[in-house]
Amino acid sequence: MIAEIFRSLSGSLARTIVDFYLTHQIVLNLIVACYGIILLLGHRNVKRIETALLSRYSSASLPGSDTRPDSTTWSTVLTQFATDFLEDRDTLDEVTGKVKPRFIASPYFFSIYQVKPPQIIAVIGKKHAVPRSVLDQLINSTKEQERTQE
Image: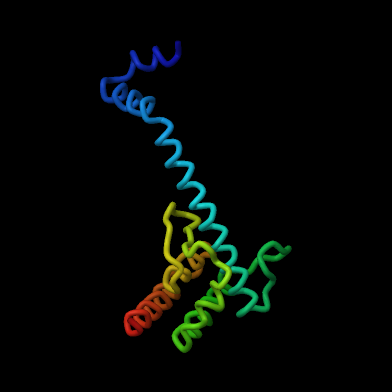
């Protein structure tokens, strides 16, 4: 009854969209569910990388404990990670060793990225409010290093 009232009040475009959704609802819902699972795996990978970075570069507590590292701590950790990556490319494998599948998801945008230093720095830096000037400098330096290595 309510659906019929909605259809009669909405225009022809809305009725066309609702009819399309009702016709293909299984496929559309499956796509949304799969995308949600991929985002969940990407967020889990970000947590794993954060834990690895903190355990390697910081004396601050690890995620899940009472105190959380602040943006200054994350700025220092990401700077050390970028510096180590510029000196030794094996640093990436050490930090992301347990990350399977090889992608991460941004917590504020519904975006999925490959596990590469510029993307790691961007996602974690934005998540923990690292100053934009620091992020831009770190991202640019790691991108330049990747270009010279290729």
